[in-house]
Image 1 (tube, one colour):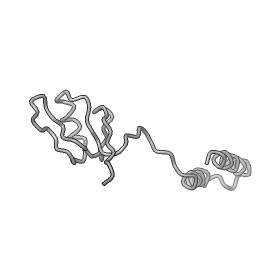
Image 2 (cartoon, one colour; image 1 turned 180 degrees about the vertical axis):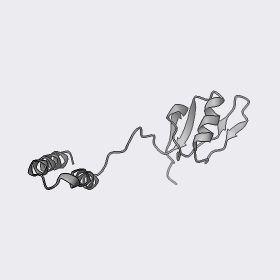
Image 3 (cartoon, one colour; image 1 turned 30 degrees about the vertical axis):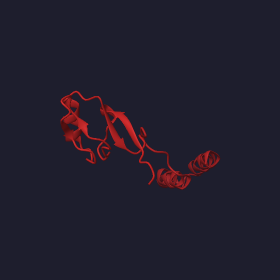
Image 4 (cartoon, one colour; image 1 turned 90 degrees about the vertical axis):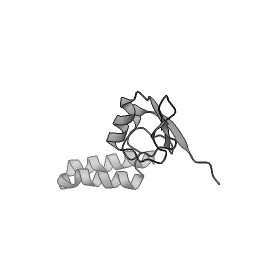
Length: 105
């Protein structure tokens, strides 16, 4: 059975939708929030109010927005330029940006 990946994060980094991989315990060793709980704002607030600084979540912690694939980048690019596609200069700019994205991929 493969080992499950978990990450220890600051409670301030917690976001709704994350899943606890371990119980959140009070100093008295009493369970405040059970493992497997899907975090929502109210649960995160309850943990913070108790002065707990770190929690364990399932999966690797990845801060910020995740990078898009090359195809997704091109789709976003097309959406951004959709209203000005009839302007030649804008078409040239879109093509230049697509080339840069292609080099990164």
